Length: 119
Image 1 (cartoon, rainbow, N blue to C red):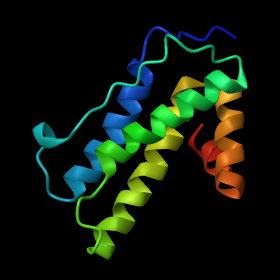
Image 2: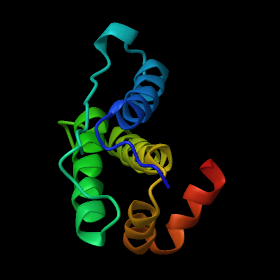
Image 3: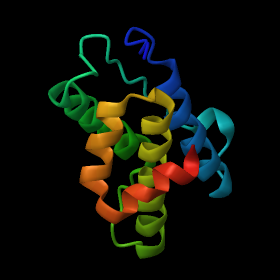
């Protein structure tokens, strides 16, 4: 398998796309949607260690674009959690690296089955 580790476009696109859809559904303008580019050219995605680091970066990026500042708004908090979960799944699917998929499935448990539905 040929994994392009120097081009974070696929992850950024997945993170930005879902964040944009979530924000637009919430009434934000497209220009207001945050985007995070996740770089992984320094990682070996053929190893569990490299895939784990990338997974953590993806989760962090999803938290940034989907997060909420007021956790007292339970509806918005639930929406942010759903946004982050879907964004992570989309980004993992976009990278299409077996080790990253394995890390995702271990971390998500039964919820990891969502990734199969995305592909």
